[in-house]
Length: 180
Image (cartoon, rainbow, N blue to C red; front, side, top):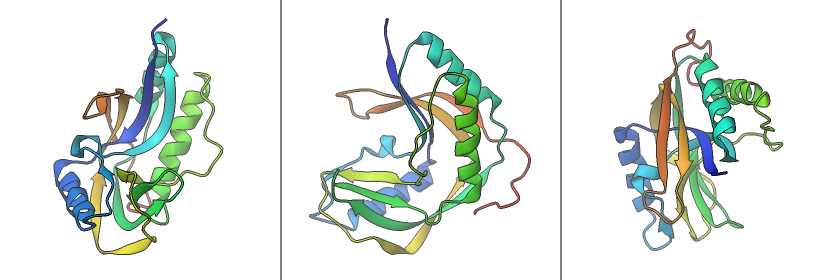
């Protein structure tokens, strides 16, 4: 039975990708292996390898999401020394995004998916195998108006490594805490 490695994510528009690439380029000589610009995203829920039935269930869960568009303000950069990942994110994680994560995990529960035990932490991987970088505030935060949720597939050995399979607009009631 064929399987795919899938995940739900937020996929930035071209203007945000350009700002992320520009921010990454500020670290000449220590940035490691940069993430392909078409692969820049924020994972919401990682699903892993799914068979056709599990994928159909996950897609149904995506269809049932009722979340409003919200704004991110990417304002922090740092690295994780163990996996040597350079990241950009927002602290604290906005309430609208945390609510989306909870709603999606609840919808995926009936698919047999078990939610991650660690608290959700918004991050976009800018580079791998990067030199350590202390966490710091960005001098100019990057605004990102989030308007959709996507289902994406990981493709081993290809660049770009990810392919968007489905898109769902965020069109639920206006979030009370737009932007955080």
